[in-house]
Image (cartoon, rainbow, N blue to C red; front, side):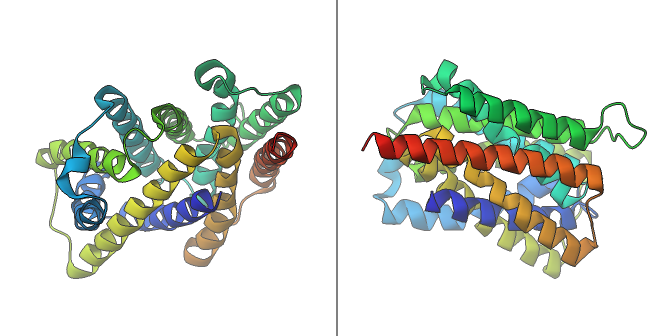
Length: 281
């Protein structure tokens, strides 16, 4: 649980940096320039955890699928941040734990009772209230945030199924390779060299995203997905604060109401899972 809390905090901070950079760089550039600076950190972690031998994969297909899902999540989040407030984007993206909880009994064979099913339905209602599909204020960009949520849930499901056969550092290394290559493919279609200040943001973003995903991977390796996934909702608080302080974003009443339902559903799932866990120890 502490790993998930730390991971989502770092990831939210990194998402704010990404939103700041979207004014000057397209999504592929951000993936590439940020990805470069993930590898110095990974090199140190690989050295501390046994050297290059840990890069030998035991579940190559699973790690590849996780890397592609993570790539989709990063790409769609970056695109949605171009025209959506940070807090709104995060609220939609963090419907992923609801998807994870709903899929747990089918793909992970983790039991989910009717209380949590009810919470999932309430959370999805909150998502519908936020996006207001039939309202005049509907923005097509929310589709990218929802796609990011689907990719994020898929990534977390795969991470949970991978278990601990491949270490968190190993999984993160190959995830970073895929993201870097995907970003590099887009560079011929338009790019420019960052300034020194922008390089500083890319370096900080690369470091933060590396540790963020490492913590998230460790969280899913150490606990059931339905227990740790709802803790991601803490990012909604941090994103709302950061969005207000930097961009002056204040969620409207419908956005706030929808986000409240999503957060409440996630916290209820956490409460139920913690209670059930304690009854079995």
